[in-house]
Image (cartoon, rainbow, N blue to C red; front, side):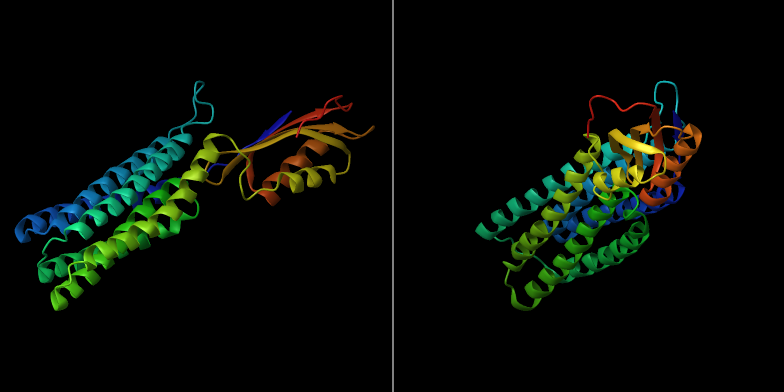
Length: 294
């Protein structure tokens, strides 16, 4: 039996999350002060939205730091799953935010509040700049980390919220049509929901140890069977520890005369280089098992 391992560092993700958390937290206080000064319910509501994002970003940062902790005898894979738990919590938070936005929009359609457009427009403009900077900072790590992707979606929803507030404030300033505010809010809520559902589905899939979407189990099995000396491959399992950190275990029955060590090394090299699986456990057998399991 042999094992291969590959690990990724999270230093870059941690720095990005720290910067974005600082920017988001600072602007949240700006929105609170601006909302109180202008009597703008829209800004105060967005400040509440930002508060949930600060909490989500803080969870993402804490999870990234946990993931850097070394493995122990009690946690043999380390704390990488904390990132997935944080992503799941952030996804649930985003779903709650989306439904809150839709509910608040419904309330405002019933009785749209009067809004002073100019100061709201200026504050939303500052928020847009901050959100663009934050989104660019997180975009590079969103593809490699489920946790960072959750934080990126939160910042993206903030950016869209800022754009929506700018559009609504402009329309209200020039036309006094206060329904622009809830109308934009509905568009933002409907934009957030399907993207958050994909994140939630992926996080749950990792926790249920499902086969990663990027890996075809049939193609992997065929590739292992194509290795000289392999007669059968069964009890093949592939799962994710966290984003882009996959593990595999397989039982391989050998043909007569096959060299055990050569076959083991060949299997490990194959799944690591072609399928991106960093943790590989191979059990070699000289006779085929009576039962085979997918």
